[in-house]
Amino acid sequence: MSTTSTLIYRSTLPILRRRSRSVDVLSSTTERPFFSSSNSQGGASTPPGASASPSGATAAVPTSYAYISDMFKSFVSKVENPLNYLSVGTSKAIAKETVKVESKTQIIQKSNENRVSRSEVTAKTRALVKKILISETATSRLTRVRDLSEHIMAFPPTRIVAAQEQRLVAELLEMVIYGTSDQLKEEARQCLTLIGVQPPPKGRGVNVLSIDGGGTRGMMGLEVLEKIEKLSGKKICEIFDMICGVSTGSIIAALLTVKGYSVAECREAYMDVSKKLFTQGKFQGGMGLILQHSYYNTNLWVSILKKMIGEEVTMINTSKKLHTPRLAIISSIVNLPTIQPYVFRNYDHPAGRDSHYRGGTDHCLWTAIQASAAAPLYFSEVKLDNLLLQDGGVYANNPTAIAYHETKLLWPNEPINCVVSVGNGRTVTSVEPTPTVFSTSFQDKLLRIIDSATDTEGVHMNVHDMLPESVYYRFNPYMTYAYGLDEIDQERLEQMASDAAFYVRRNSSKLESATERLCLRPNVQQRVHRSVKEWMDLKGFYKPA
Image 1 (tube, rainbow, N blue to C red):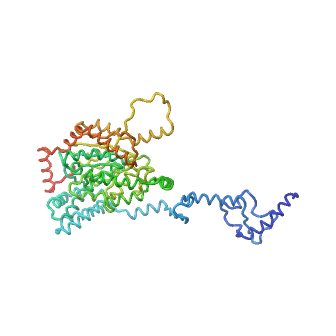
Image 2: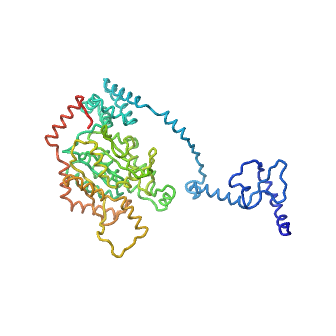
Image 3: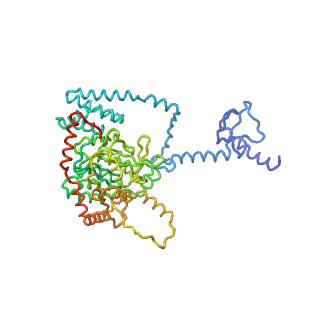
């Protein structure tokens, strides 16, 4: 050993011996972890020339590599828990939840335990139908109808079995038309809806309303609807048979349909929600983006929705009221290979006429609105069973085509009388390319992609080519300024209202034509046909459309 190395060894040996007393003795047979100092390349686990202990164990001496590895592990644990790293919310460390991962065999066994055979479900459906038919008192009928409704919601395909029971449809229709108990009427009406029995249209054919997304720009669409309401002398829910909304359009649709608000009442509630929700500091919004990918407070948004709509109201519950339009709220499924729409419905389709789009009837109404308005980076996504939902505008910011598809499934033998599509503002764009621009920046490319994904006029052009001019009406006010989705500045809101009022004045004749079409009453042939169908259904000759 050289003189230099001997001096270094003698100077460091006392330090190493003192540190070795404070560490645990590791067995030579102990499994070495990845970050163990014995695996390190920064030095040996014992000083040069030191003898091993009689038991074969060696004293684990921390080295520079082990110290760095400990720092790295600590940093990784903090990054995995951003709240610990940023010291936001609480100073206590958040313990990691141990997730129990089930094997494929266990998952299959569990699913087999919960599986019920088709014959058992069918037999139970027919037994519930029989109980309704033999029940005599109003209380007994109410209980039996509720049981059947819950059964159909648990097993949706059983509506086909129930619809084949013609006496059941006749019995439920009698409860709705001639029943003396309002509660029994509501339950019977909901059960008929679940089976797929649709009420006749209010006018000469089916009237459809589609409302785009657009954040607080929904104020502009409300201006158009208010004009239709004034011209017709009726509420929106009394004119239309099907109302479909996406994002902010879903909020408006729910208030007009379920709550039965006039447009003025809807505007007041809508602006009250916007001011409560979008009044937030930039720091709080920035922290929300980092931690939850949500600029605005999603929990506050949920609490506002529950208070405004009702915490226990489900989509199908809204079909209990007389003359309530069919309501479709559109969201987007984002955890599939391709983005697909998810339709929250307060109705079910007739037996054998299923929609192309996924959807459900048993979800809470506030959940449907939250999912439809969960704009990326504005609010958190909504988890629904194994689906992850975002703003419906991600798939279709103009839901007119989806509304038309759903309507044709519900009333295949009725003509489409009028389709009104309401947009929530568009800017005037140049029709000529800019000659001096030969390349675009990354930001411009990103904005073009976003504009393409949320475009509403492309759907409008397609539907315009599909439907006659006397049937389809599109109203989308022009904006003098590109208002944001979360615009709450009072001057901008006043300018927004002024833009919408100007558009309504310029298109007054078109609005009058649309309203006149909406108010057409059924002709003699339609009245006779509908009366005969109702009589046959009451006599037990119901057939799915």
